[in-house]
Length: 332
Ligand SMILES: [Zn+2]
Image 1 (cartoon, rainbow, N blue to C red):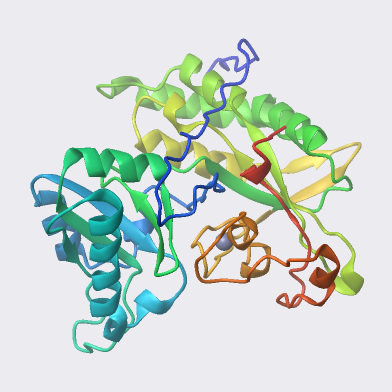
Image 2 (cartoon, rainbow, N blue to C red; image 1 turned 120 degrees about the horizontal axis):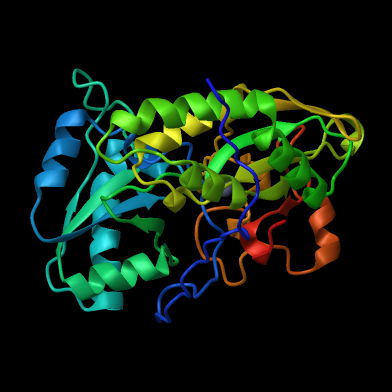
């Protein structure tokens, strides 16, 4: 089989976030992006039958993923629902919004843990659009992420560590070169050729756009002795693909490659992390960027009023450091 060429032909495409809307009771932001492990991650722990019914529910609706772990306990659901109703009544002028709480994963145990994602329905299209534009609703009563039910693939393709540099532009070069080399092209060619029989095939142009969109963020994990052991999140624009399932093929392919560089050593692919505060999978709780957002009201570590006082801030063992992430709106 002749190898297809995935050489660089275009400038990188990087998606930008919508500006936050002003709302009296919510923190204006801007907020960091939350990276999920895959499109359906917000519904991972929601019972299948419930997901189907939520999808069938008519009218404008939102998924609301509650920050923190309080929503895991069904005993808290009524109070959380009341807070959601209050926020959408006060903040958006909704009269009678309806809230569906996630059911326990174990049907035989009504007290079992549940997902942290709720459904809000019975709202106007205007409210739905406004909440989606805000993306994060952070108030003193509750903090949550508003999402559409039409889930989108995650920009996060893989987490990698082990390189001998902290410079994201060098990691971007290493990843870009690897994704277009012969080892990678063999797998990419197979994916493209096999897709030819599908109604909407994946083309070389789609894959090239996907690779061109790569960007890197650094996660400043610290190891023994507080030495910096940077992890890198490798991101792309999933909207470059013509159908959602191709994202899974490409992610599997790119995670299977050997990342070696004569100049910065060997990269090791890491399992996804799990932040119990924002539910993102690219950082641990100690590096969650949300508590550092100016005006953050929600659950979590409050930002230090005096930078010097941050020295004593508790962090999980081995997870110290700073999140050099999308908060700054800069990627290499
Ligand atoms: Zn987090």
